[in-house]
Image (cartoon, rainbow, N blue to C red; front, side):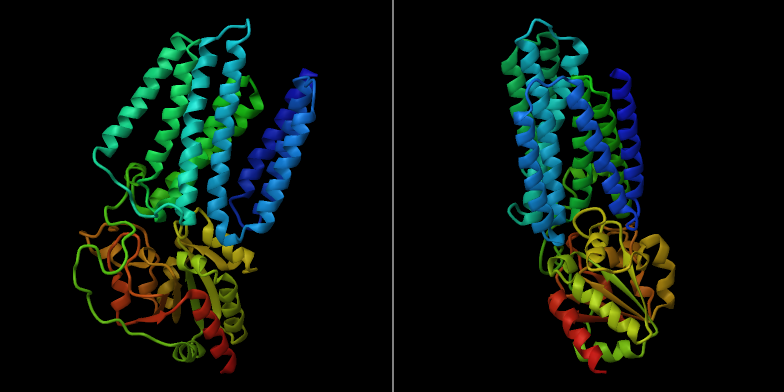
Length: 463
């Protein structure tokens, strides 16, 4: 039986590895997800048989209830709500790991087996990381859902206080390793870790959620891996390590996409983050923005041969992905070459724009990453920016005093004409004016993204 167990675990691990590999491309992502799910099913089934479960009633009940909740979430949650759901699922993973580790601690405490140092250490780490992930993910969910403010939240002695809490948890963990029977100390570690999760994520601004989500995903994997050591389950160790490693790699990619360090994001980002209205520094706007209506924009596009669409969070908020798909179809019928330029941190989770556009049946080969399309902007007739702001702000290239200086951006200003669809001239997450709005080749197309794109499609059809 042990040979069969390890063989199935090996097959499941291969499924996880290839599943993650296939998630790197929109074309194969669905197949990768199915492959990883198959691996998890194999791992669960063989583990149940290995542990010689005496009664399956509660396990079956949990599987039925969990599956029902999963089906409801998968079918009812809109694609625009995917970041919130991913954040919530990260929290569930971390919470589950913490609960399992605490349950195993309680079992050993009331048994004659006794604690091994390695087991106690991994219990403490699993409880710590899992609890931080649970409450941190709930705060991330709240920010994305609008329940918790999306602005940077700072308070006096924020960083020293958080550091003090972390040191207190680690010191308590050392004490538990020395005296494993002190259950009250373990409960205190859980409580402080839950508070720490809130305090660590609360200062992160809403627009930094792509980094926060991927980082919390990494935390949930690490918590699962620690729980695997607690239970001495190789499959859980491997699966958790894969999630933890892939999550941290993605986090680094997100940070590079903003030219910022992970510590800068985690410690609260820009002081002006989340501001609305004029630039937070009070400077005068650098010119007068020219506006265009749907009819004028349709006439402009009628004479174009190429068009690049740049989606941003405004498209997600307005749920305009289907209207954007209709715009693409109308333009292509007129012989215009249409492509999409996707910035790595556009939206509120990694791949947010890709998910929305794929859900609207936009072909995968039209969704191009920044590094693949940036050189094409000078040869493009019209660029349409929908709800993006800081990721197209030329100040990132030229203004050394700007908080976004050095951040890789989409070179939309190099196009012959760039049209920006926004509700107003308000600043983006960085709290600074977008110089692009006042460029001579820039036009503002004001309005809600869905309504604005729908009007534009109607005007194009009439030409």
